[in-house]
Amino acid sequence: MFYEMDHDIVCAMSTATPPRPGPSSATASPTTPSSPSAPLSPSGPSSPTVPSTPSTPGRTRTRLAFDWRVRFAALAVIWGFSFLLIKVGTHGFAPFQVTFGRLLFGTAVLAVAMGVKRERLPRGRRTWVHLTVAAFLLNALPFSLFAYAELTIPSTLAGICNATSPLWGMALSLVALSEDRPTRRRVAGLGLGFLGVLTVLGAWQGFSGLDLTGTAMALLASLSYPVGWIYVRRTLAGSSSSHLSLTGAQLLLATAQLALVTPLFTTLPTSFPALPLLSVFVLGALGTGLAILLQYGVVAEVGPTTGTMVTYFIPVIATAAGVTLLDEELTWNTPVGALIILAGAALTQSRARKPAGGRPKSTGGRP
Image (cartoon, rainbow, N blue to C red; front, side, top):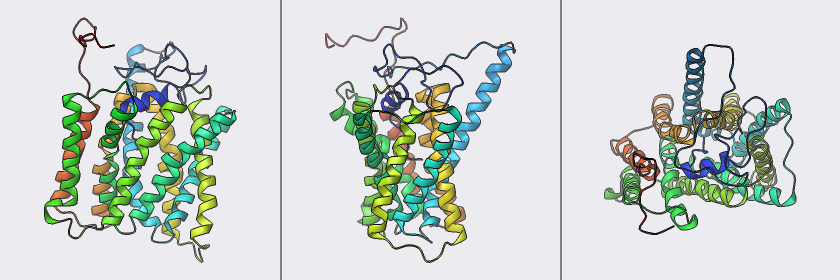
């Protein structure tokens, strides 16, 4: 959850280093870029080269396709249920404690993965400084905001707010990333997406019955992700460390940040209720640690275009989980607005097709 990235930014994070020899990992690059520091072209990455084996090619392709689809579905379910787990976790613990717990358990999972693959933490003071900022923008801040938001808003609404990340990302990339140029389709998608946000929030009835503070926190959390992605793209895309190493260090730093902040705003729990504690554990171990490994594995195998489509399933699963398991109320404008948001997000990620000859269309002399 919370790593559903804009197409270009997934490419940047997925191609910081060429893939290392050996078995593919969650940090493997979808394709080898022309240079270690060059981001992968967003026009259509190829899947990683699969070493030839004595097995039948047809069977191998079937097995690999089945494997990534299962992992893709598991990722959608894990991230979709994460909003429910946050809600249950806050029933027994303070929001900062929920965030600290999920980061702690998530870091433990990545530490085990790094140990198995014999990965080392990245080196270099500059890399650690950039990772500290990334940890705050991509983990500590949004995780905490969602936990606080769900004190006053339903998990279904939090999941739908999370789906606005591609919209924020597209809007910010037009300003911060010079290679991203607006097209009519993408601008229309941006407008359509935010129309969906207003539909979900019931703007025509003056946002009545809506907790504005909690909703604003959830939307701010979703905005924090693309800000972090753009920062990572600008500062860490040329790192020589593997993505498993970078992500493990990032979660470690986020955990340290919450370890410093949590005692300042909370007191030690007097009890550890079983269900909230289990929710925090699952949220960290599966929703943060395992999910990151699954996502990078899927992106490495089928490319970021297909891998990031998991974004569009998350609010559907989050809504279904909240309504069926938490008895949260669902009015007509929530699913309708969510569909509009997803349609807008899909348009913002669309790109013009290349002509039949494979050459890009003329840009009127522009580089």
